[in-house]
Length: 209
Image 1 (tube, helix red, strand yellow):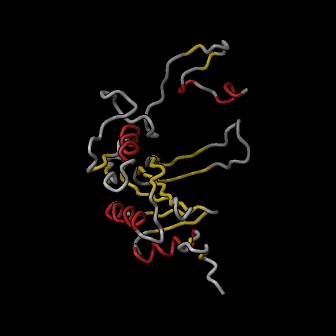
Image 2: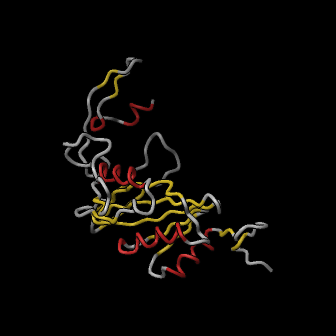
Image 3: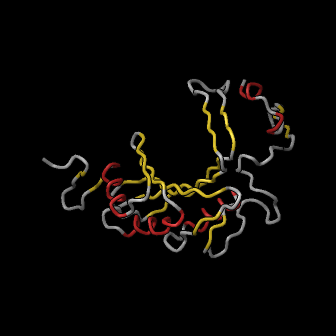
């Protein structure tokens, strides 16, 4: 009986599902952690192994992840964070997170066009000294993605050929997508004459109703 973790296609290399990809990566990188939720595989890697893992996913014949489809950041500040149920949503529970140290997670979405699979690689770095190795030498498209994460989150990508802001002015202070970045805004009168206040003065119910 065929291994249910391997789907075969005539005249083509085997195509792995999430469990097969997970096992294949863990066989070479036993120190990484992994998680499968639904049909999504996430691999958690230490910064020291990041470049090696990204290169492996590209060059390994079984994985063949030729495309870095996306690279983005998430900021998890230190302390207790509580995400309340919002009036404009339904069914979302209150979510509480407690962290001793602030972390910025960088998410790499790698995709195989020839094998038709994708998965996520996550690498964390302290938010008070955010630094990761650049993967531009493996995937040139990372150039622009890393510049955006540098601009929005302040992650220093070591080895990047020209790490500079890409969205904000060069002399901008701070990194706007960090959760500890101060809210603010400019009053704008929209065409429909409905006034929307700056973010730090908004009431969600007022906006959506």
